[in-house]
Structure formats: C-alpha cells, structure tokens
Length: 202
Ligand SMILES: [Zn+2]
Image: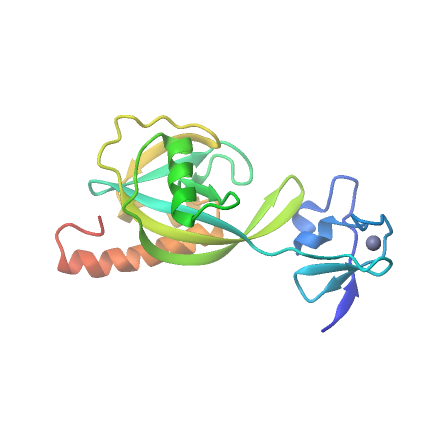
C-alpha cells in the first residue's frame, strides 16, 4: 500500500481537466482542517494529523437505449459536461433506490415517458467532471421500449431529443466515452439479433 501526498489543484476553483482523481479536489482535512492529507490506496484520503479516513467510491449511474418501434430516442444535453452533445436518458442513483427505480425516475424526469421493460446490456466506467470535481462513475446500461411517445416533454438536463435509426448514429456525437462503449455493444447485439429476427433488438 503506497501513500502519496495529494497535489492541490491549481487555482482557487479547482483543477478542472487536470484532475485525475476525485480526491485531487481536496486539500484540507474536512474534520480537523489541517493540510496533511495523504492518498490511501487509490480511492481514499487519510489525514496525517487526526487520522480521518474517507473513501471516494465510484458513483452508480444508469442509462437506457430506449426504442420506439425501430428508432432510438436520444437526448441532447442542456448542460456541461457535454452540452449540446447526444446522451441517453438516465443519471445518478439516489440513495436507497434500485438501479431500475433510478432509471425509471430519470426517464420520467427527463422525457416524461413511462418505461420499465429494462433488459441489461452492459456496464462501463466513466469520468464525469462537474463544477471542478472529477467523479468516477460506473454506468449501467439497459435497453427498453417506449410504446408511446406522445407525452414526451424534455426537461431537467435535457434540451431536446431525436428519434434516429441506430445504424445512422455517429458514436462521436455522444458526450461520454462510456456511452460510446455501450453503443458499440448495442450495435453488436443489434447485428446478431437482426440477423435472426425481423423485429431487431426491440
Ligand atoms: Zn484531520
């Protein structure tokens, strides 16, 4: 187990893109206020004065490739990170909810549609830089269907949405690396299933 001193971020508002770990955003011990924080393993800080130990575990987030008939519903992000880029409906889990509950809630909040027939697709790690702090996230991806989209009303951190044939999506338009990774997974599954089923993945 190695321990190294944390480098304080440059500038008063944090290190932004220079951050590699969430703990790079912290300089003083939140318990005693001394500046003797050391890194403990990769995910924790320990104060050299009072012994305070805190783990920055990964955050859990979920997202869905929602199909309406043979088209995919993709969101356009309203905020940074990735403002105006494509994203999936989804988001961070709240405390004490299941992944499925969180995903259903996020889809309701962001698009105002009801879904629920979630099928697990894959998971992928992601870096989420928000307000000068880097969050390490584990994204969990699902597929599902929306029977009707007549109620769609983009809200929250979604500026708009598009309906698109998945084979026409440019993966570079996605805001996050994890989504690109999951999308490749989806295309593989889509390719395999569309070869054996006229209905495709939905
Ligand atoms: Zn301390």
